Image (cartoon, rainbow, N blue to C red; front, side, top):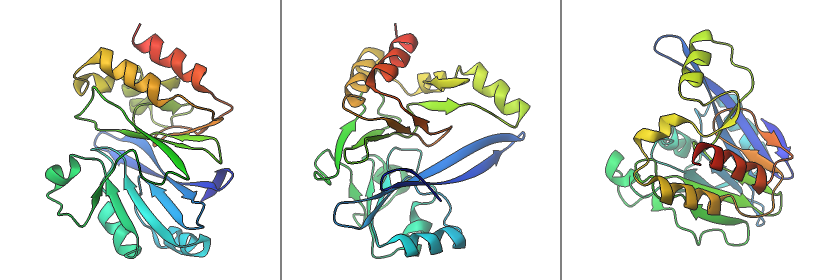
Length: 223
């Protein structure tokens, strides 16, 4: 686990998909103003990570930020049963979860985050989080930032979907975007604010970025 901004840490792992497709994955941990921990898109709760988290503090919130990033929510919650789980609306029906988990909304943790829903892409159902005190923008799948990729097949796949190199919006999202105009406008609104660190679930954390950098990427993808 490494600190990437003041009070913000990441824990990283990797997946090997069929065909030797390599894919990095990342969880983001934020210390809230009340001292507790908030975990975005948890990855597999390996014992060493669980131990490091317990040393860091009390996990108060676990977040499944879109309709894809839910694979380790239940196992992570089992490791931290006192935490409350918040899920992207739509996951309850997809996973058959009951009301033990709460739906995400834009009014949660008002002292710590500005929370925006990305519209026009309901099959992805992504929510974006701006952590004000660390000036960090936390996203999941709406941006990738691949710099080095150890697998030839993965590099080929990423280039096919125009998801690399560098900061990109993957064309893989095309199959999920229902309204490109609404998606573009909503994403531009979601990246508003003052920040200098961009944290995503896949690819390198980007330091020294701002909303103008992200607007350029959005407008290049959706002219």
